[in-house]
Length: 501
Image (cartoon, rainbow, N blue to C red):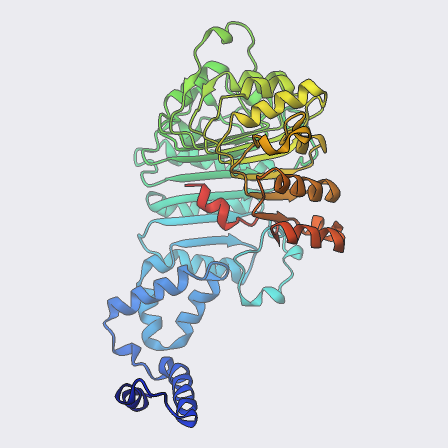
């Protein structure tokens, strides 16, 4: 190949004969095929090989478990380098039984004193995104859930390295296991050593999927304990509590950048004063998520207090609240720099007064999620909703699902059909839409109208369900207006990632 390239340079600008050009193409393809087989990678210094192997593991997004196994199977030198590198093994997922658990403990031991990122999934039939090669032959639905006794045994062994745990995510399917987690965290957290490296903690309890999230019916009689036994976690910045209570008054919650609470009844919620105190103690809060959980509703005298300023808040999620409660909640804080706003399950009554309250509250929103929102669809109501959209002039990405057809008409001003040439578009920067559970005909007409009024969509993502409902002619119309793509459930789009910064 090098010889032919040298000849090519010598005779330039004359072209190579066709048969010689064919020889060059063949030589180049042969080189690409053989090079990685003949390259003497094991002659490289150990430090360089170790760095290469790290890239191999952590770039294998869907199968890092299998990638680590393959590296140790390749040759003796690679196995020695990989096992000696504790950073290859410090992300450990405990799930299932038998060989999976044994392998997770092997990872745990190989990590030695490296910072540990631990995930415990007590429901083996859940997500399987990080499964390994034998996933096709192992039926996880037959595996038993982790019991409370098993959880206690596992945590006691894990907490031998408590000082090195950096991230701890636990998913359980029963009350007993959740209470064991809180008990042991309180016991070990209150110890003098504490949990110095813990950056992120999440505890999710399943069950009660159809229960009222703000009702304590079905909850056992329990006395909430302070988080980490009331001790301070000096490095903690990310806290997520889903369906598990703590003693808010005796818990030290400060300097968080992410605060995520879900499914808590009033009987186990912080009072409004304590909730405001938590926000004040987290001046650099970047993400706040409240899904069926928040402060106790206190109407008296709360409107006399100034809202807590959250200047660094970028992501805000509010879901599953009544209209009066949602209005009370939004009155407790001010976050003018929110970039990603999510409103979900605000339905069952007219939420128009809430949207009137939110008008001009979030002028920097670029990503808006509207799932199952309800408002009065009168002329005045549509005008008010349009005014709310106008107060977010930077809106560029919309996620929408389970909304009334009238929601789409709020993106057009009354009377716009009479004078489309001088039309001032609503959300002029909106170019990407993620749609689920909407009327296909309305979606097509909306895309056509956006194009007509000089505010065309650039890309529409649709769910698998919506894609099946679209007719061939509708697909043809949409692809003639913009790019149409199916989006798997839970996937993140490149546009969403770009706008999140």
